[in-house]
Length: 425
Image 1 (cartoon, helix red, strand yellow):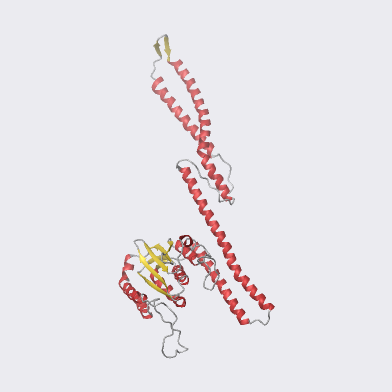
Image 2 (spheres, rainbow, N blue to C red):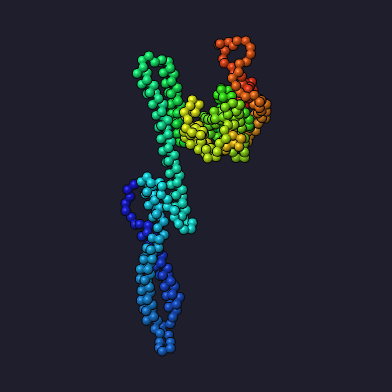
């Protein structure tokens, strides 16, 4: 922004120091003039002669003028030097700001000395540079990984089309299936990137949300996946009201439960989803069984495109943005995400969000909701792992919907319907 030239801060401070010094000198001389010289008699006998007041006033005026001239020069020189020393830290901060504006984020001011206003400003600026450098590096890694991930399905599609073009006798059905799978993966990745961007911008409408209901919905949605992997899901807890986006918080819960199912033991694994209420926060905890993880590995799982112990590309690996999306959604809602490895294997993931809703709202459904929770505890703790089984009986009607045997995953359909009717009432 172009501005008209003006006096520098150093010159302004110098003039201010000189002005105050001159004012103090004039006031001091005025005090001497008024309270000392003014009360002297016209003639005063002193040893060796007579002191004449007019001569004394003349000599005093000459000395006062010389003193004021000295104060002026001394104030200008001393003020200029003092202002330069005072503004030296600001000069370093300004130079560092210009370097940051030119794209250099690796430098730091590191202003020495004890804490004062300039040191606090320099330390805050260094902290900002550190956060900016980490954020830019993370965005660069994210852009590079996203480009790589998006390029992979496009390259596979091109290779499949080249093979089909060079081999006219190739089965078109197999080609269509493989292209469909590759295209689906690319769409899932694109949607995940859009969801991540939306959560980072915090462009969503906030309303009251019950995390316990979202946990139920996510568990019901992922029941087929749990049955496929032979995983038992336990969903227990209390009403956990918060304020946020129901869609984003549902995505957060779904990602956590899905990761807990996929990254589990090969068979007879368990997933436990629990909601609790604290004084000012609500907590959603998802923990699973699995391989033992190190704290160093767990600390990297929230990075985009990190899948377990390495970058894997399987049908069940996902796009590598599950926990990254969870972390972004939690931060967008003013919450925190904590990952802790379990000593027996697996991981415990805790999402803590600010509590929302009034006490009356929470107490209105406590009795009914707790009754539902007691039935769920009985249902979910059956020591029977989820699996796809055939129930003996007559041949199923092909027009009827597919029915799965729901064991340790969620409550029965009748319990869910009763709970929903109770909440509506």
